[in-house]
Length: 232
Ligand SMILES: *Cc1c(COP(=O)(O)O)cnc(C)c1O
Image 1 (cartoon, protein in one colour):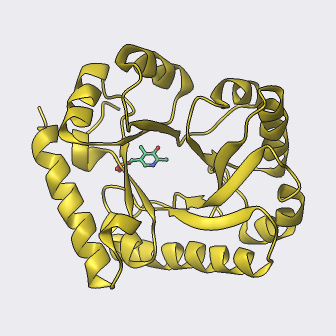
Image 2 (tube, protein in one colour; image 1 turned 90 degrees about the vertical axis):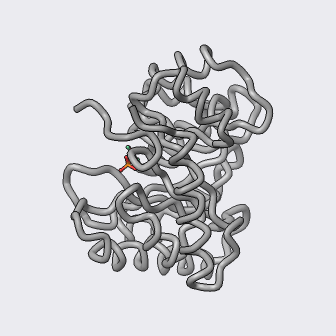
């Protein structure tokens, strides 16, 4: 059994080192502990050890765990998985950030659902940096074209971009994708659209998060390095 109380300080130290290597403040990087497949009791242990943000990618599993664990001061939940249209209603207001909005249609529907609940939902736009047919997300071009329309929705708050680059074992091979996402966020900023912040870059997982941090990640999504390997 992987010891979360031992792993968490190691991951935090790796984050600190990677940030310092490139002259960034360690506090500019948030750790999202990816708790998918991790049972509530072990999530609780992670929170006791100091984890502050949990990332879940399946709605039902997330809801069950959030209910089991209850509200804990300083702890927030992020949604990082693919969302079917009919599920959008249930994520609104339940997660402090949704990382995985993958199309303008989805953004529009989420805005409508957020309006129904009189709230403003924070989101990231997912970019398909590897142009993979199996993955969702905007292409770089689609994103730039969609931004003016996205900026018109007032019940969502676009905080930045997220990507899951094509998997390769060699973390260095991920670097160009991280650079691309960072550059794209800069390009969106130059559009100067009202309400579009682009302060967050969610990129980097267990295998490559130090590289992602070197390339500007402000949120890293780490599962295996904290909780051990998942059943699959
Ligand atoms: C599972 C998952 C992660 C974590 O992956 P690890 O390699 O276990 O760190 C990160 N992001 C997303 C979107 C995931 O689904």
